[in-house]
Length: 434
Image (tube, rainbow, N blue to C red):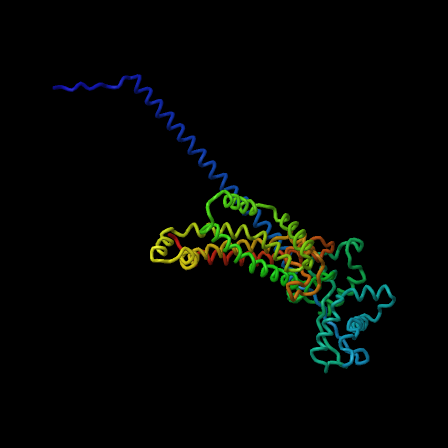
């Protein structure tokens, strides 16, 4: 029996061909759109990286000079009439520095000229002499050759931040002072040394004496309070909400509020700390204790959310296996689930702490913007923190504070990079894939 084969009509063939062409045209259009989207995405990433690189280079170019400071070599006679065993702490060491300058430039006369001459060195030069005498009292009656810090104006000129060829009216260092500086340079008495004082000193009104030790200590104490409170409270809250809390409307409301708190502007937490910790409880203002409490409120939602996500990532079979061999629900959580979720919780905690380290706005509200010279030794001592120190220096009018602002930003960025690198290492080291 012959089977009759029906050939497609010419009309149906034409329709099919048009459909194929339309599909091919549509595919080509979608491919072009996809390629365009990928190109725009790559351009956006490159643009962001370019801005980031520009920011880093700008900060680095302005800040690296702060790690050196200009010093002047002076021959200082420790006059026993001025300095003796009975007045080592009260002696006029700055006066000895001034006399050594007068010996170098005996032609300088008059009150105004001497004031300009003495302004070549820092007001902290006498401290260098004092430390030397306290270190060894046998130098009394002898002449010491000491490198003492130059003033900020001299420092800026030597580092090239201020052009010597500018008219006198456009620079802080006068023509006479510039000539004296050139004489000292020709005698080899001016040099640039490693600026250890930047890391070992507190804040100061004199830029050449200002350091970050006070702000670093304040940041350390503040973060210590934040970590000691936020980590146990955050982990406990995450465990309760994820493992033991009943699933009802109240826990839903609580969960929504925790998620919303993570997105609240940080200054709101500062206002809360101002009203509760300072006004109501009367805790000491400008102290790391209050700063740490405020940052704890800000960090808690981040730790709770990260902790719950880590607990959810643990397979239910771990809980079921523990319960099946007779463990109580609490034993199953604390002996089996929590240890497996802890690396993720630690990662979230470090990220939260890194954010807390860089925060400024909430700490301004609790008074940590005060000018504090002393290094804090306790949690209740007046202190400031690195971001606020940067804010204070950036607001200073003197040119010398510009490089110190950039240098402090570099130190803060180094801390942030170390903390984030630690989080990445912990995640890669202890993370388990199920």
